Image (cartoon, rainbow, N blue to C red; front, side, top):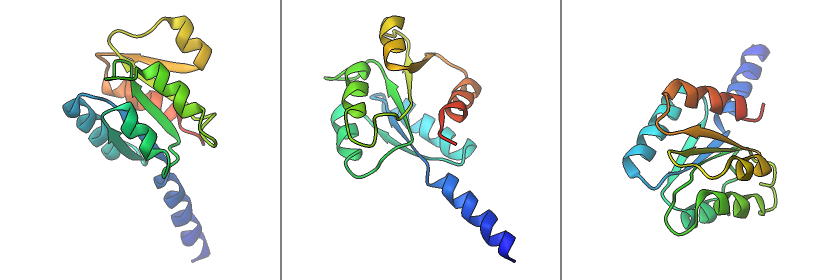
Length: 134
């Protein structure tokens, strides 16, 4: 009976890991969140702009950021810098989704993994699985 409780706790720990998706196209954002919820053990949260993302991280500490590059107001690179400047989020991995990404030099400096739009869902799921903290 003890082993069942231990297995249950381990599963619960995986479920509490959270991804924050920042995507200004509502349809794409909702679709990606649904895929992540259906195909991974992680919780996925979608916001549509950088301001909302910065508000969310004041109460939730995501384990992975998935950022669109072309966001209204603040682009994905600047948002990445602002998120990583917050105490406790400095080492949070970042996956960037973009059809028109910034220079590779900018991505490498920030250790951002790029997934170019359009992408296969299997590539997204593989990237998420590789990047989530174990």
